[in-house]
Image (cartoon, rainbow, N blue to C red; front, top):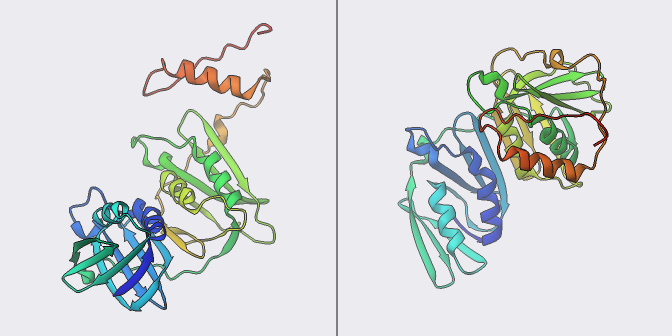
Length: 288
């Protein structure tokens, strides 16, 4: 493997897949990143066995090949280079990097020990990245943060009449959003995906109005993919509670106020709230 690549492009690609690097596994190979060069492009891939992240990065190719190195070390090295252009060459014993007068060498891992990619699916349907990002952000904010009930850390995805409903509930509150899917039948979709991983994947994909995201779901995983990024996330097993039971049948009190003032007041009161429950009391009485 021998390529020339821009520092910003490589740094951006490594950041996009870093979420899938294992931080707790005893398998050191899962702390690595696969650098695969073929067809005139560089593909970087990481996995912790529950999520796989892949990014395609443009580069100038001199020689195809594959190399596996520690992802954190590689990012730290290229982040400290002082020029835009980086040369990378794998020798089988180490990955040699050069940028201007600066040189570095990172020990390679055995590529045959890295888990192979199991994702060969094609997108079932596509949606605008901006719409999906907004729906995920809104729905996932009520997902549980603790592990007492793992299923509540998930994001429920259910096909409904007017689109794909994303919902989360931590036992005290619920949030949901419906993603419009015109001319696409999503009635067969019913699964639970880890809310934190889906939200992080969407942060990497971004909200560019010109970007579309392909979505495919099977019994074990959900795949989100664009032209340059792909995230394959293992689904959570179990039954999601009917969060709609938490909703009151009637809403006798309506509050209208300035959004910025409400947020500021909530942040101030929240500074004194219990760190675990984070409960605030809203007293809506009188004229103020």
